[in-house]
Image (cartoon, rainbow, N blue to C red; front, top):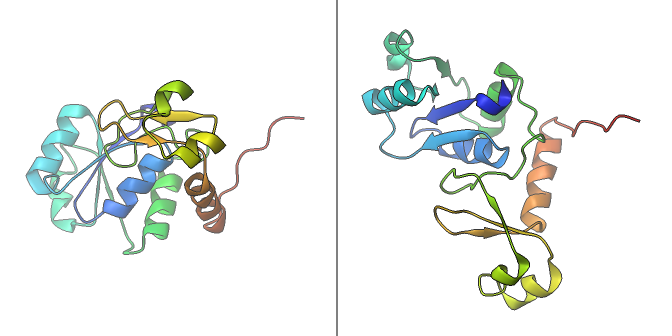
Length: 161
């Protein structure tokens, strides 16, 4: 089910939306996604609404809704990952954190003009967002994401022996 999960997060949940994208979950987010607009897009695109707005209880029949309990993003992330049995390492860093598009491999030669010289000289693997054209590579940001997931209690699945 994890691969088919899609969320629409209300404007109060920006940090949670970014972290869900970092763990590879399709998550719409923006200032325009609240109240009726949020429910409309969730219903149209078969997304689960993530909200802290309890006024949306009445719409729970027209679109699935998960009410987020905490104000703290770590607890919010834990709630969503637990509610839907999401392995945060399974699709880690496969979506653009900024715009939500799935990342695509980028040839090293194509990355040369898109990244700083030092990055190009020290990195071999690159991915890019086809929508917003951001370029990503496995560096300290990726390490910090993994470290944060470990800190809040998640560990990568072990490979079978």
